[in-house]
Length: 185
Image (tube, rainbow, N blue to C red; front, side, top):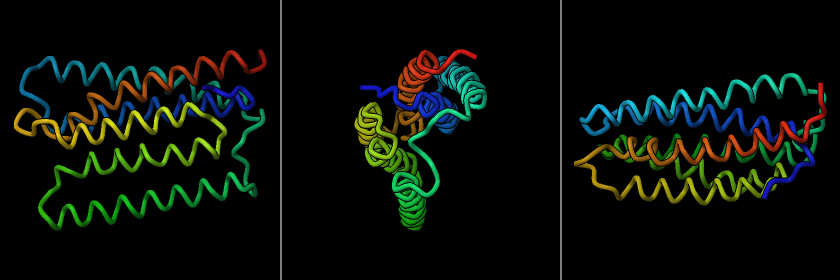
C-alpha cells in the first residue's frame, strides 16, 4: 500500500495531508450543528492536523536531498502540473456556476470530490498506491457530504468532520512510514 522507494515524498504527503485536515476542519466551522461538542471535535481535528503537519515538514526539510519521484523535468512533474492546474480550473468553474445558481452550499463537497479524484492521478505520479485509498475515501466523503441532511449541518461541516480524519489517518501513516525509511541524521 505504501512504496518506500522515496521516503521524503511520504513525509511530504504527511505534511500536505496534515495541513489539509487543518483546512477542512476549519471550513467545517462554517455551519456546524449548534452543540458545542462539534466545535470541540473540529478544533481537535484541526490541532491534530497541525500536529501531523509540523513534524512532517521538519522531517522533509531535514532530508530534502533524498530522492523524490517528483523532480522537475520528468514526466511525473509534468503530469503533476497538468493535474494541479486542471483541478484549479475545474474547481473555479464549478464554484462559479454553483454561486451563480445560488447553491453555494455545494461548493465544499464539489471541491472535496475534485481533491479526492485528483489523488488517483497523483498515485501514479508519486508511485504511492495509498493515494488511491485517499482518492476513494475522500470522494465517498464528498458524496456523503452532498446528501447528508442540510437541516442538521452544512455540507462543509460533513466534509470536514468526515474528511479530516481521512487526511489525518493517511497523513500519519505516510509520515511514520517515511520517517522509518529515511536515513538517520
